[in-house]
Image (cartoon, rainbow, N blue to C red; front, side, top):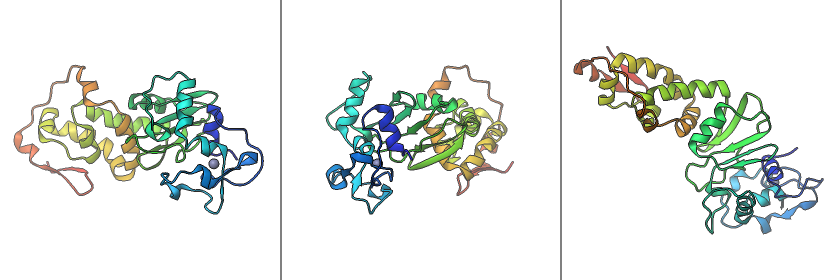
Length: 266
Ligand SMILES: [Zn+2]
């Protein structure tokens, strides 16, 4: 079986082909004839030991070695002539990664993540989203096989969904952002009264009703959508629709409950 790091390192050409041998401490894959001693590969600064798939193994595969070395990442960036900021300590933990067959590697920004997920590759691919710029994501990603169901690493876990579900959630989310609601407020359901007034209570409630199921049942997907959705500024250029007149007294009649769901008592 080809594990996620073995897939990534093969696409990027930074590890030897697989043979047969011991299982890798980190990814659990076959180390082949290229097994490295775990203690020689995994630096003391690598803290994500909880990710080890084969804890009793003492060896690491070439893919995992390559995917932990900053020099390996910097070599990939240089070899591909990528327009990416590189500094001494920059490595796999510094950026998001989009890796796809047969030879695709990008460090995508949120707008590019949006584009990728609305039309994911038909080939094998992985996407690890790194919001902090200080996180390894390739180990924690999954290799998708090119179908409409896929999983990407976002937040602190794999988000499993389908292209259609992602698009529906994104559409619901961006419909609110287009009206001027901040991304944070759409995630929480705690809307600013002034924006409610501007949009109109009934319209805002109808729009929020499309987001509520994700807020309740799929906060992981909503978080992914919030990361890559267009922001208020990207909708501001479009001419705003005239807001429906709303009495100020109506605005006071909604509140956010403990789940962040917008409740209105009109
Ligand atoms: Zn491995």
